[in-house]
Amino acid sequence: MRSTRIAIFSEIGDKWTADDVLVHDETDFVLASMLASFTSNDDFPEPIGVLYSVDAPSYDEMLIDQIDGATEKMGKGELDSLLNAGDTWVVE
Image (cartoon, rainbow, N blue to C red):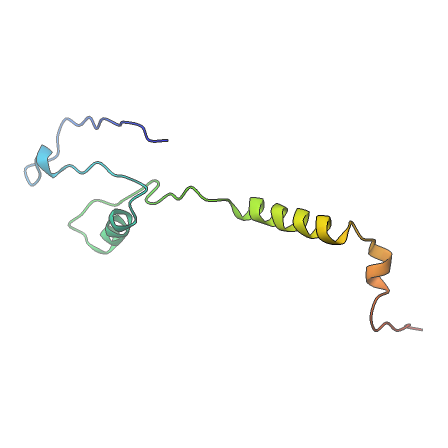
């Protein structure tokens, strides 16, 4: 969901004008990359905040989906049978 943002400023110095103000779009990868490179140039302001945002599932969501899919396919399983499966040995 996109929202309109209005930048309000009272002074940007004698080096910049209002025409130099860029309204950031955090879904634009190229713009985010350009802003990220500002940190290596002392002539530009330090970028802070969200530089790039992607509407994608999080790691947690994908992990839960993977576990649910495996459980649905193979059943819940039992820890005891897992621990005793394959090559086992006894420590005396």
